[in-house]
Length: 429
Ligand SMILES: [Zn+2]
Image (cartoon, rainbow, N blue to C red):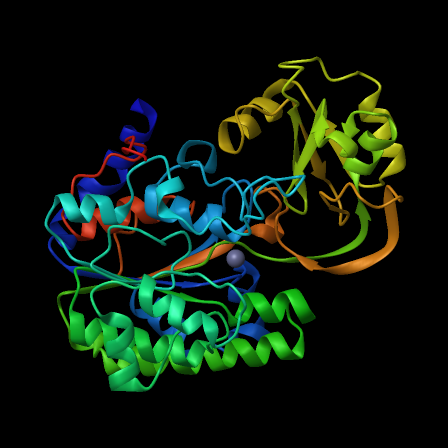
């Protein structure tokens, strides 16, 4: 707690005079890699974002968090702490035997610490949020939470019921937009501009998804991804115009993302390897050891019966031989750092050093699939390809920087003139 408080103070106090009592907009463009801000073929697709950065500040590379996946990263932006502390340390609840068929970590009640919307509420500030991850049930005045059940029109009824403050119906009435999982980013940007102008919330959170989708399907710098980037940039330009950003003195606009991307070739299934040795028993839905995986980073968890068993020393060599490009770390500085960042209960971490992806599945027969190839994030946060960027308008002081996505939290608190303590525990049900 003390450590986080120091980080908080050092970032916000010197800028508070410039930033006090503004309205803040945070836009997250899911899966926007730092590399897009240096390569000409991507830079030429985003004149509006680059103009925005020129008028304000551009920070890249910005480190994501471990694991470098969407729900943990977005929760770190609104809490200022690592997934190990805020508790959303995966996109999905860990259910290796499908106990409840839970799909995604949708629920704000699962966040262990106070969020930006909690501090806003305490400070009598209003918040509007459009599809921000892990906000279902959040104490947000105008909230459309991210949630889907079937990715079809049935979801719209659910979202109407789950949204707060009448915002869902109002967007339908005024813009003819029913936001849901398959909405386009153009609709999300249009809804964002309307929300900023109509509700005038102290804090507005906007979340877009199309670039992440294009990257998973076609890869970074693919023609489809660059087209998507161009569309996002055009829609972003329209949003900035609609809210008249550059002529307003009371708005702070932060553009962020959650992680980068990379291509992988070859998949490792360490839980099949554990199952083959009898450590995972599917018949009784139990295990002595099991890996929880996030693509390029997986952690080893103990079963209920064996609280803290030592990790057998020969496992490192065996796993590296079986799965090329994979390293098992179960002691030393890196191990302690990863535990502190992602999962304090971990007995060890599997790290992808190269392109190999680590899958959690234990039902197949093969431990390594050489022919598997695709695009993903979820690699260790210190892998340069996982880095992202942050853009802030108006510019923040030259000696201040955003080096981690967790810095967004204190930046927003500063803009809203709120005293926020990153990592402050929250009452949970
Ligand atoms: Zn993401």
